[in-house]
Image 1 (cartoon, one colour):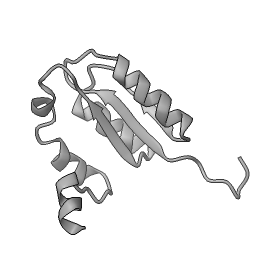
Image 2 (image 1 turned 90 degrees about the vertical axis):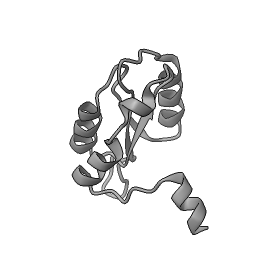
Image 3 (image 1 turned 120 degrees about the vertical axis):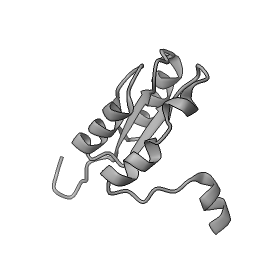
Length: 101
């Protein structure tokens, strides 16, 4: 990679909690990779700590959390706050973006 080129943005992807549904995760990985992102796919049954550690280690610009087994909301309790404390991101929620428009 020449000095004029920049590295593609990294995103961390995984399936949170005790969920082991991997098909959608693989599809998202494939699409994002094809679109030029550097995907760090943590796979299934990933903890909040593993997502955060991977984002810090890779300088990721986003964390994409997947869950299909019905407990994703529980698995993500407090996650947004932890990310806000540990990562230098401006975190917005979709509903906040709609209000600003």
